[in-house]
Amino acid sequence: MNKSAANQSAECQSQTVDRAARRSVELRGFAVLANRQTAYLTILDLTYDGCCVEVRTELRPGDTIKLCVSGRGAIDAQVRWYDRGRAGLSFTLSPAARERELKPRVAKRFSVDVEVVQRRPGHPKYRVRLVDISRYGCKIEMVEQMRVGDHLWIKFERIEALHAEICWIEKFQAGVRYLNPLHPAVFELLIKQLST
Image 1 (cartoon, rainbow, N blue to C red):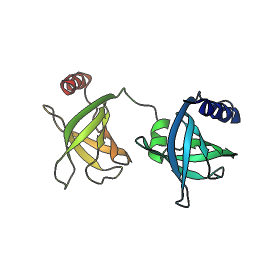
Image 2 (tube, rainbow, N blue to C red):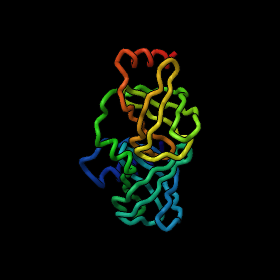
Image 3 (cartoon, one colour):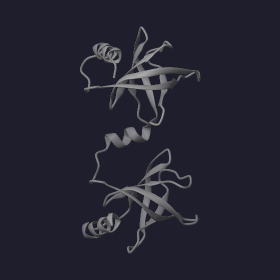
Image 4 (cartoon, rainbow, N blue to C red):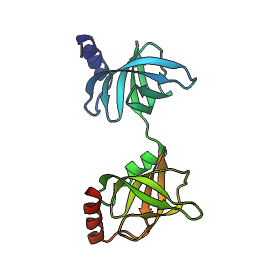
């Protein structure tokens, strides 16, 4: 990172107080504004819940934008402040993500990357990718449109299909809650099976 970027980051950090530690970066990207215009920008520092950017287009505090960085995806953000070509943004969570953040996890989830069979009443069976798993539920990548509250069955190899319900949906992933949690011993064997 060059000296100029370090100085700009220091200026951004002086704009607000009492926040999480920020990491200095120099990432090029753009913002899609409410009027569909594009504003090119450079991210100067970054934290889990926001960032400071250098941008030539004047941004108005309170405006919602979509922040895009090549190869890293896009995230909704809100303009917190704007001053002489620099702006502070806070990242906004989708309603589903916000609800999940407010509810503590019932049990530890294990990251996995396997396929399971999903079946819904009146629909054909599909193989879907499983992203994580716990005794009480899992996260899957959807291959068909579903809604919160839909019932389905998840079939792992060597155990009975589990009757479950969709708890949340975000983009192409869904949170699934088993109607009957897995017995701890069965879950332990399943984790061993999935990790081999």
